[in-house]
Structure formats: C-alpha cells, structure tokens
Length: 105
Ligand SMILES: [Zn+2]
Image (tube, rainbow, N blue to C red; front, side, top):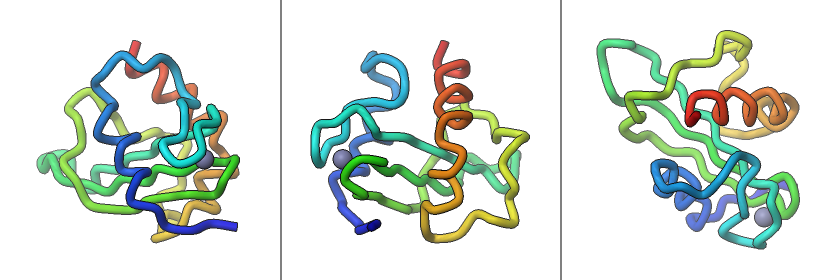
C-alpha cells in the first residue's frame, strides 16, 4: 500500500510551524493521517533520518536531514527495526504521534 511521494517531505519541513497536533493533514490527500518519526543515531551530530507517512493514502518519504534540536529519540522505538520503509513505525503511529505532540508542547 505504500508509495514514495516527495510531497510528504512537507510534513517535516512544516514541523516548526503551528500546524496543530499529530496526526496532521496529509500533503498528498488532505486527510489527517500524516505522521513523522525522526532518529538521530549519534547525539553529537544534528544529522539523522526522517520518515513521514500517511496512514490513509499510503504516501511516504524517507530521507536524511538535520533533526530539530527539540526532538528526542523515542525510547519505545526499536532501532533495529528501522529501515527504508514505514511498516514498523505505522504499527506504533499512535505512540509516535503522542511523543511528537509532547515534544512540540
Ligand atoms: Zn494521505
């Protein structure tokens, strides 16, 4: 069901804007099913990996980027299960949304 869509990068690009809590409106289909997960492998480096995806239309993006300073790696995410796809994070999207909302305040 998943397909890469560059428009999903917007979920990351608009993180600092006040767009309300996750799940947010999907840039591809407009439904409020867009999620974001970020992972910073080395705490000393700002670079990391981003996954954005929509549980409604299946659009997703996976890319390397500078991770915002406020982001903290969620302790409940099994790093060994992170790959290029979003099946794993989608299965725990409710917890990921709660985590992002807490960090965004
Ligand atoms: Zn969508």
